[in-house]
Length: 378
Image (cartoon, rainbow, N blue to C red; front, side, top):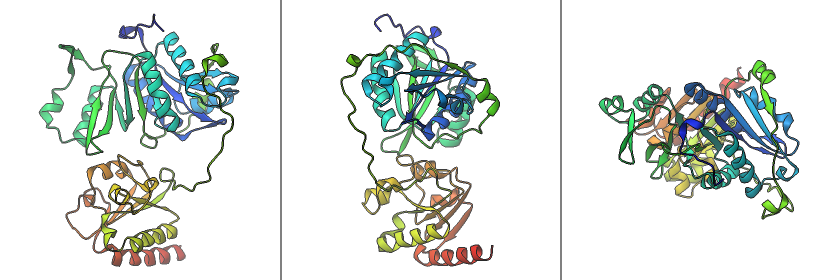
């Protein structure tokens, strides 16, 4: 590691994605990151490689490749069967030092949030945590800023370099990593101009999964490098894995989400009950704005937005949600948005396909009744 020179940027190429598996099952985030990594690799003109660690996990490689990878690097070793920070960090850092990727993406899961900082520290490189948007090509990045920011056009048009250590630096090949800042009230774009690989953890659910390509899966290169790992490298030992039986709402996988906001304040229990009833009719789940979670009205696993879950359901119904920017950023890609709010000037109506100005406690029972009739007559 002492001979690893990560400031010679031209020595680094390819985009890597750490592909997380648990007990032989790939995580949904893997497919999202491989899909996003394909876009970034194409912008850079390099290959996309998936990095898969575990014990006897080679059989998972082609499934990953079908979403865009050119190569899957399979690090197979009995000591990698159960996740430990020491083992996984050592193997990943060894691979990075040997092969020198210019970017490494990691899902912002519980494991990813533990692993990525350890690797970044060992490699002496930058890590941007909890990203919600990634770009390389400046034209695409500027288009994103025009759509998602309030920056003036002249500021956006003039972008192309940054001052690094007092000198202009061309950012055309730097990964532009965008993440929420200041509690989700601002979005910050961050680059890592001096060191490689550039590292980012990416929030689950924010990147779109590409269609599966069987031809790419059949033609992928699967490599199995030698893994140098001993029990003495690991300071902790997994004695037992106990799964907690706790029911959590699956927002990212739901086709229909009925979310509640501050508008339920006059009857919190009644408002949530109405949302649950409407969600049941539509075979959906209940979501929430950050305000309801912060007030303790509903648990955090229901939260939609930049500081919660990013969702893309078929139908998103917002009951009493004003539409703060951090909430809209987490649900604006929904196929159909229906908003109910007493305030006709609520920002949520700016992105709603259907808007109803009215009291949610009067409107929601009508919606429930009408949806029941429509489903019965179908």
